Length: 478
Ligand SMILES: [Zn+2]
Image (cartoon, rainbow, N blue to C red; front, side):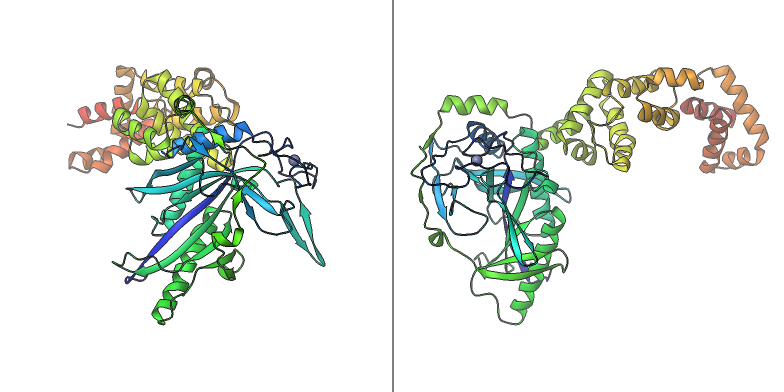
């Protein structure tokens, strides 16, 4: 970014709430990969005289997310009609929340390049989704399976200043929603989408200038790319002495990696909001909120801090493990069984995660259970198998078949050699056979020692206790 300017970015995130049925009717909310228009009824199709009913589960899960984002929950909130016409909206209006949402004034802490930063959340409110249009040659196809599905909209303050910060924030929202179980937030299934408002201003200026709202970004990559493009475009306009004079709405094409003008930005007045006459207001009691608050689990940032302060993990280990609630549960299970958080983190973040990544598997899909991984770590700690073999041959066999590591070690004859006499004889043999390296080490060449250790490990097919070998070699060579 140009040195003279600062980007000012706010995000609106729509996330589908994990409910069995839609927001205001009993149609199935599972719209993914279904035959078009099978999940519809007179309520979500907006037939005259039909009455919506609020989905209690959606309210609970929305409130739980709001609490995880440290929002205030007003005792009273209400639904409003947001009126506009579009073919994906058969009712002719969306039921949303305008001036009295279920929650407001929260925040979320994010990590960008090792720096902690707080992004304020203006509000989290509930609404229903529109349908899906598919444009084909000669016409447009309407699928209303998604129409009326429960959504939460999470609106941030313009506290974000770079594309990287924007995607970190969006990822933190996704992780948190999954932690509390309010949304699966699966981007590939369209369960989470972003609108990003971008403006720029001369550095040091505190005023907000006209912005471009980029609609409907559906991946973290598009989010970053679209914001970067918009910053560049607006910087160019400023440099030309012709900054934008009013708010606009733009779209983004992944194919061309460009934003394109859609319309002047619509204001609240354009929607003729009014209170939804068919729904009662929502009233929540302090008792109920307290109960929900107790259901909010330890959050990612809290986990990270605990891992680092109590278990001495590095920041990158803590961030990696806490980025996925299932992985964090798995890890904590291994720690409980081994009482060795550091080694458990090493196994999980290096070898286990690289295998999962290679095979595109999540931690719930792998054959290595926390029990057997814990057993392997305990065997390393008890000197029953070398770290090398544990991370190599033994882990491979465990990963493929989910076999008990003790069985693998026995069957393959990989038990660690810890016998001092036996190891010393072997070390002497290696030193004799590699007299040059032994001399080099005596002259101060550290690499020569590593070479000799390597030779002993090779000779024993990795079974020698490497730490013991090192000590013995040092003793022989001094
Ligand atoms: Zn319906």
